[in-house]
Image (cartoon, rainbow, N blue to C red; front, side, top):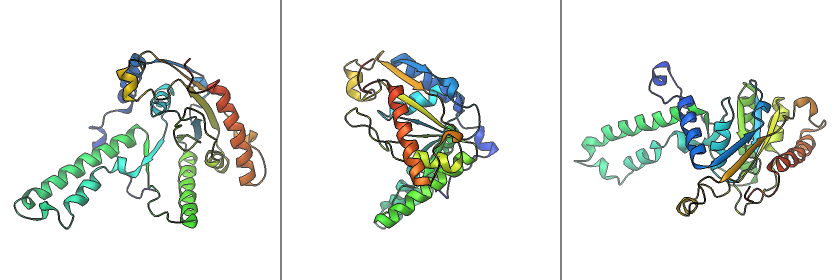
Length: 271
């Protein structure tokens, strides 16, 4: 979906922060601040394509999951995260930009070059750590264009897992606002069925609002217990049979139930 995904060359890799170092740093920081308990990491297949899913309580969920699972997990992120310089470059190139006129025009090329280098470095670093860019639905104006966008997104994710990647999906589609788990959307199930790969259910509890500034200022964040549990995979041979839409609906219902069981109660209740 992103035709301009940064490519990492051999020379680039010499200057990127290794994923394992970044993961170790984040894991140590996470366990220094919170009391994190992880169960079931042995349930994640060591190789091959797959989809790992979880309820979504906070931005912290991604860090807990990404540092708990041994193998590399692919996270889809918005295009702008991989190309942060583009907005600034557009401003510099704008019709009324002061950098189009003397004397600022003298330094415009240098600034644009620097911004492109920084943006490229960030994009390649995120890619190296497991990020994959997706274009958001900028051109979605009606139901037809929305359907086309989500179809292309689904195809993109199917190709990723077919290539052997383990991708993370939060089937609720967004973080919870009130702490309750929302209903799951069928996208995850459709991806797994089409690609013929297992789904690994997981559930997190105790992380809700734990990255909010007020939780740190009040001291509530420190040593708060967070439990992340990974369940047994649902393998393709156990998927419901029949038309894709119906099979995905049944599989989504089973997946939602399994995640709820792994959460083990109200996800915003303290442990």
